[in-house]
Image (tube, rainbow, N blue to C red; front, side, top):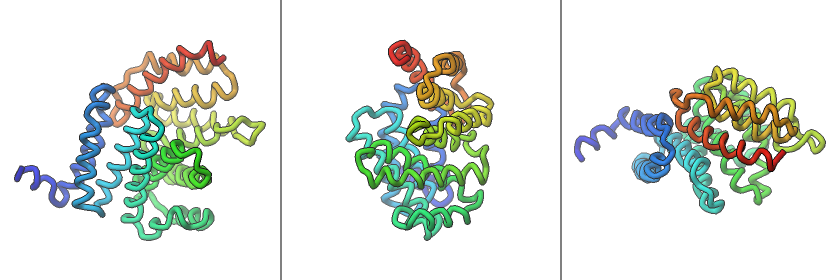
Length: 270
């Protein structure tokens, strides 16, 4: 126990937060992660209680809670609670990072946009994690119009990530933009062409290694425009691909599972 406490001191604490998230992301066994991740969540909660302003721990907590809710939780009420915790941690991390972000939900959209305009590459981890946690929160609180109204802030966050460094996290900000642009068909104000371009860019920036980008491309764009050939092509590529990619292994394993599910339901959908 004494040795563990020494590890958790000073810069070692930052490394613990980083290594927890990385260890989970590198594991491609979905059953193992599903069974073990709750223990990590409780550990992160405990560490944050002791170090409530440690940005790296707050970011890791946001990432892990969001991942667990998105990948493994089917119960809507439970997923909503977990995503609320993820967003709380992400907002607290942003607030610790820079005081102006403490009002990220209260300030009007033009003020939020002006704040993001001042961001630089050093802000990327906070912006990306905040955008991802916020998107997860809105998805599981879609019956709350106040939450849905915050979608514009998620878009602004991911657009700023792309503007600062489109390669960040394998270009995954484009995945979020692809989903946002494909929420509605063109006839109702959606932007399917922009969604297609965003998904394709996410795939390109990862050299095809980000399998979730292909799954979302099929699910949100190909199904939206009823393109069965594109749908099946993307999903078969996922099923034929290797999941072991640094920092993408877990989500690639999940993407394979979703690709199989979507292909199995394709006849019924199309």
